[in-house]
Length: 385
Image (tube, rainbow, N blue to C red; front, side, top):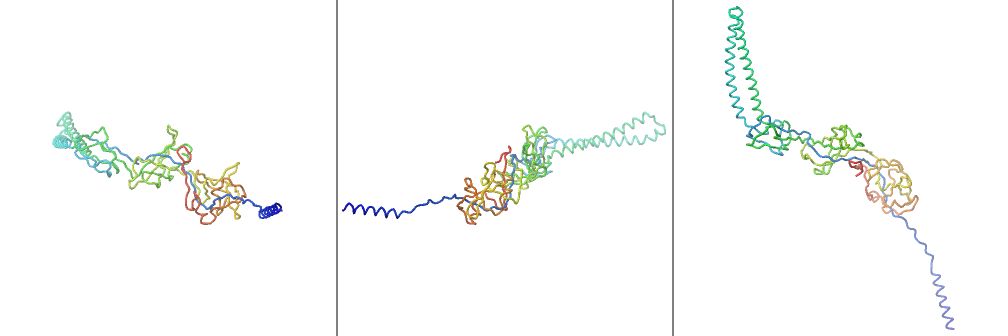
């Protein structure tokens, strides 16, 4: 009897336990994504080449008169204006020669006066045939010789005065002294450079561009020049010359004129010159990894109001490697998936992590605003950098 009662109690417990269980349905797992609202912006691609700054003008100063330096007035790094005296060469010997020449000229003037007086007084006698032709010819020759001697002395005097003036060696241009090879008391030679003057008010940057780029560049084009040793912000330069003949390395020399009014950019600084390849304004620009390519299709995923995604085929324009221009397939204001897009399928339900409008606007990596420009640079071999 006890065994039967125990069996009934156990059976009842099991029955009640079975009635209390419910069928469990597993929850559907949705992919998590992030989105951003599409806005319009600008994009540009560039080719960059390396070069060095150089003076727009560089003059070597060589004295025309050698001699002992009696005064040196400028040194390396000094700014000198055109016409300023750089150094002085001793003029003692030249001054003595000039005084001697003055004495000789005075004697020549007296000789000319006598020869002229003789010629003038004998001319009537010759015309009256009182003196012979041979005698008068000698008088005329003496007069003309005296004139030539005085003229020769005048030329020598002018040459001496020029040589004396040239002993004050001046700068032909305004600029900075970048080389100085004279010292007071030493000898200045006509065989060597005494000074080098560099005009740094405008600099030149020469780069060698490839044949794929040279025909896209024109004289007068504005280019961006970055000199990291001077400032991170790029400077504006202008294409000055384009060599139509290739160098031995197969590149074409392009010379960039770069204003340098404050002289802060120095000669020889490394430079990066960026030439604009393509540019588009007021267009749709998306991060490169948002745009997918598979099975010959280029597409993005757009978030829909019902928390599903739609696959949208797009056509692209300028591609910088980081950003890409979208020409068709999306519109301003669309919500494009920017994270988690790689494994989505058309019509799939998703969980949008940054669903609020504020997060949607600010939470996208690589997004550019409507007033910003996305740029890229390419190295001198044409590859994107």
